[in-house]
Image 1: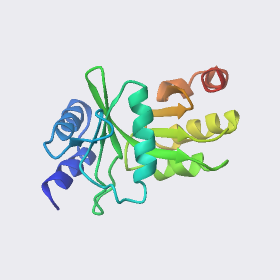
Image 2: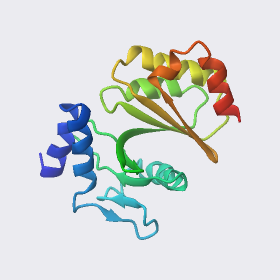
Image 3: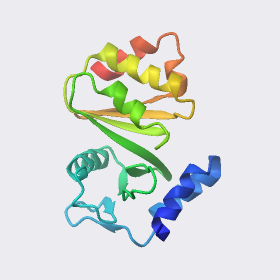
Amino acid sequence: MNDFTEELAKLHRLSGAEFSRQVERIAQRKEFHPLETDKDIYSVGGENSDDYQNLLTAARKAVEFGYRVYMLPNPREIRTPDFILYKKGVYRTYDLKTVFGKSSVGSSLIDSIEQCNRVLLNIQLDYNTRSLAFDIKRYFEINDKAVEVLIFKGKRHFSIRRFTVTRSDYMSLFKKFYER
């Protein structure tokens, strides 16, 4: 395992403030370089990856929403997040799930368990509001480590956190955010 991979592997063992400090340390590594085309997107390579175009599309959208984006490498030895997003002094890791299919969110969210406790859904089509809300709620119910689902849809973005899905008005609140 190389040094960068070892630093990423530590994320699986840390929590709380130690986890946050480790994410920041990773984002500040000298291996990251800004893309020539996007000064707020940093990479360590991986341009030949099958997922690179989806990652770049979501990263560009994140920049539009005010984030600085660190695209993480995908070492084969461990499951790692896809991004570190930085905004207002806070670094957070996210696993990207690009939604192209009409019924793919539930399985995509389940797939991210053990990879990262935050998921970024980049919605590329009109997805049924009720189904999406239900899939997100179910994800939080079966993954006790899940913290957040960040949703990018068109020119909008919003965050669903664990406490949100426990509210009695969750469905109507979700509908308001998703369909506005």
